[in-house]
Image (cartoon, rainbow, N blue to C red; front, side):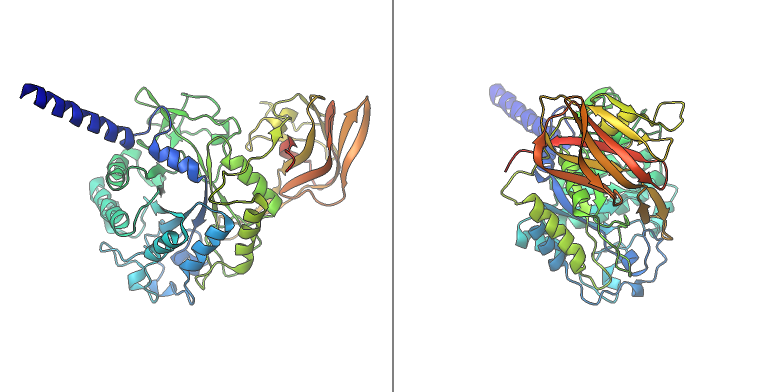
Length: 497
């Protein structure tokens, strides 16, 4: 009898240990993180009451009558995602305004009280099942409509969130990811993140959970290091624990991004999920005016950058006021998927070998600064946050290369002047570099391998018909509207297909 009790106890302990492994991050990728890394590439969908009011954020006072799509078609959204090679769809179910895209028992500020009562969450979830891709949800912690949000007892609003999240996780099938936002408006301890995490894992242990601005420099203090500079393990701390991955929208992690982060003296593994907009204007909610999409070259290079090193990417492809993704926007996503040859049955493609990473660089001109933050070696340090900035309008940078390593591709991310648009989020980027050349040194002589009299643009990708070997490579600015500046200049060897 005692032996039987002991065996039963040990079996229960083993089960509890296995469950515990699923309920918290681990030193190595747990099952939720493994599933997330395997997905890799998702389509973010921002759609809600903001879409119909030409704004990015609202405060819960926009009239329900304004939500009025004339041709609401979530099936088209998900079919676009499937055809474009996305592995999952991440739907904004509730933004900071509190407006819910499902019929929630806990608020009247939702689609059920609007002129168009379609349960959008159900429609998207059903379409994901239909087309064989995974479903994920964004949910804002910050709710500017719900009265309990301002209650002195933070648990009252936590209970409200738990009730709504229970609706989402019990009525809409399997949810692979929960993307939480808006945590800056209260103390981290007031959000009940541990309660949310436990609730989610109760319904789906393999659902990955995180909160925007996941990591801080010191526990309990809200000071941050950009993800691009998080290049050391076990140096930074959880702001929201537990979490399964890191978020900082819309920052980009470094090529040498690290994965180990601290909480209460323990180290945990966290991949990074990047978020970018398909829109060149960097808007999340679609506007009445049709806005241009990013160039395919930039999207392709950002795809490679963001899905490298076991990190993930979600790209925002928002529907318009009719309730459909505009054809030209959908076509950009489809063309990118075609260019990358994306398929659910294939691994995500990789960029070639970067032969330029951290090679010595000399600049003819550097903007004056005390901390050497604009030095030439910023162009190949694997960080989109740092940049070389010249003091003079005409300047050049020279990079040493290993002559035994060949290359056939060059990508250049230019720092550009920006003009903010009235919504406070969208912006126009204006290139500085108008004419330039790319030269290589062979046998002590410079040879020009690329010459352009057109503006460099957001991301210039030069695909060379031949492979080259060189001792040095030089970017020479021949004409610019202001002192030129470069985030990254990558010299790449792409394998032959």
